[in-house]
Amino acid sequence: MSVLTDARTGLRTEIVPVTAGDGMPLNLHHVTGPVPPTKGPVVLAHGAGVRADIFRPPGQTTLVDLLVEDGWDVWLENWRASIDLAPNQWTLDEAARYDHPALVGHVVGATGADSVKAIIHCQGSTSFAMSAVAGLLPQVDTIVANAVTLHPVISAKANAKIQYASPLVAKATAYVNPRWGIHAPTLLSKAIVGFVRATHRECDHPVCRLVSFTYGVGFPALWSHANLRPEVHDWVEGEFAECPMTFFDQMARSVRRGHLVSLGAVPDLPRSFVAAPPRTDARFALFAGEDNSCFRAESQRRTFAWLDGLRPNVHSLHVIPGYGHLDMFFGARAAIDVLPLMIKELSS
Image (tube, rainbow, N blue to C red):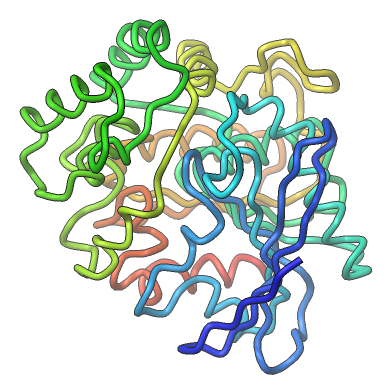
């Protein structure tokens, strides 16, 4: 266990080891301010091939800052997709069954809270939602989910890429890595970098271009350059690393079906996550950037329609104009345009 203090904000971060249900080492970042929290715990789950700190861009007000200021007890997950952990060929099923229940369970045990809130993003969102829908997170009563939840919808070009190109790449490498833009160690990675240089000319930042190649079809795919401060754009270079091809295989299957599906190898998960009503009473607040080039905003619209059809007037949907995927969290104006809405939903 280690403790870090941010000199700029005064926030204290305690890194807490947690063991997943299958024995994999994970951790939580417990963030506290100078004043003890007055509200209950909220868990944040990052996306694929990033880490807990993706919610804490430098030099600006972050979601973590605002949550602590508002009195919440903040816990950031490093689940098995985190680049702070050893690279592994994870699936959404493993995260849903083994990671999120263990991490949330630790928070409940450490705080003594009766309930937990969650803010989840991308594949942290899909896997966390899978866990909740399967009845594995009974302590969670509010889920704020960004980008995609139960119904992944991508563009026709992105669909062709994930259905046909990804299986070919998987034959040659177990992982793709946006940091290849800085150092490409193999002939395949060098070839991919060369291809990206030729096709992604919207940016001189090599990792930014590789992120777009890896996670969607866009120029760029995960944010608008106009939304990012230069300091944050540079910071991105250290926030992406390995993402396994096992994930892309499962997402391709889910896209074909129009909703999340399990692979059938992990117990206690349904094969389809929309074939029956969710085994959770949690209220979902769904967020999407209208300009998301990774997962279309239609992803969240479909999940909202499904949830609202089962429990009318319980859940909510916010589609934010001018935003894409990750700039919902670290855009220069996110602390004004987006993050207060997410925090408001925690208390609704």
